[in-house]
Image (cartoon, rainbow, N blue to C red; front, side, top):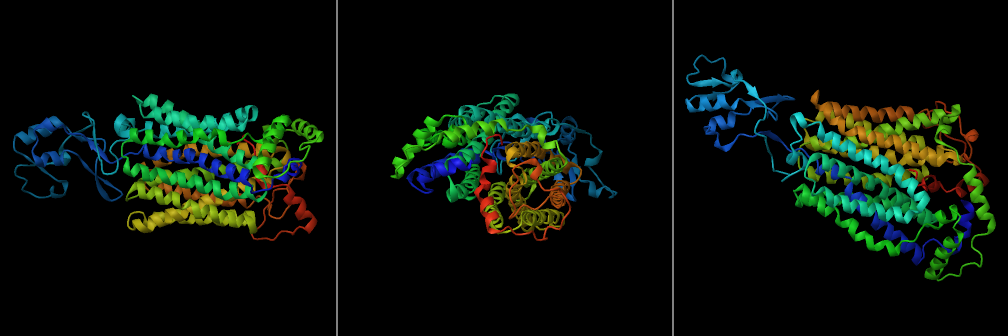
Length: 572
């Protein structure tokens, strides 16, 4: 909306009004960032084994030997879901027999010893005993979501991400109709209410339902903060807010949760603490204005005029007598009439090829990102430190993505970052069992590559999509991204067949994104397409191949269409 940019240029880009909006919106991002890692800590599964009642009257030897020892990836581990028949063990203990490990079964003299491999096994009839080394209690330990009920744990994560998928669309529909500000603070309030509510969940079904609502508010909060800031701020301030400062605050909020979980080891208490940042943001209602750009798009020119004149007073600048001419309202109505639908993304060959390729890339990158986060729970070492480091690496990744977007080819940047992440993850299978420090370094390098590639993907997708259907294209890619989020918890289930399999799948999905990107056209220093007919034809071309630079006139035309407007819609 170039007319809008010209109409509000009298405000400047970094006055008191812009600074207030900038910092307040960054602060309102903290609740949604602090919430996203809750799925890892609330649903953590600590080491466990069958419970042996204290009144069983077993000797110390039999008490220690009552849990079978299995070989997992060449390492001995106590069984999590079975024990030797307790009645039989009681009888042998009472008769004075001693347990004998399998490795002495070839000895001729066993005396009063009993070979453990000859004993029958049974399930955990008396429940489980969970390790409290890192967690005092989690949802898994309280509701016994292990062994035969283990399927409920990834299902709970799936429900959380499905809540995010629904919030992705619901927040867009509601905010497009009723405004950005009510949806922002409504989603923040939802995060606080349901974070507190899950702490009192009496059963797993109730917790899962409340967890769905928590996911609904999490993604809605971030999208509306991003869009509101992108619509109120203009020029370099908007670019700084959306591409660097807001992601940095979001990552900082993510880093708070591992630190909080380190000191608060009970999942119910942790849920209550997660409600605090949202409650602290509610009073900010009176400091955040409604989006003037949205008001103009809905035809509320008088209300937009009032917001901008108040901003002019705060910035101590003089507003023009007429901010929005009548032609602006007529142009808004014309743009509404030209809106296309979802099916138009598949209507012609050129846009269909680009759309399907982007859908696959977004799905693959999302599964890789969240699959990597879920697989971190299987690494050795302190889980709080692991997740803290895995989150902290996002800061340089965002910075590297921002630098690459300023001066490098889109395809080459995305391929380089994604290839770096894929190779690091594939090398994990060499070091996983023998070098924990090297393994963690490779995980961090893989996370850096995947996240930096994802940052480039946002820009690349917007520049590939024509203006007339750009919002719809971005929302469809976000939908496939959320599908990938929902699938990612089940990657851990592949570890049943081989502990390396989840890491291999994540690495190959990143490689798939690299291969698919080769067939996309380059957009760096190219004019943004306004119609579907102007889209470049998809063809294979080397990523390092140079593109014809634009002349000065073309460059000025291109940069008039600010790239950040590709995601200035809550349809994400």
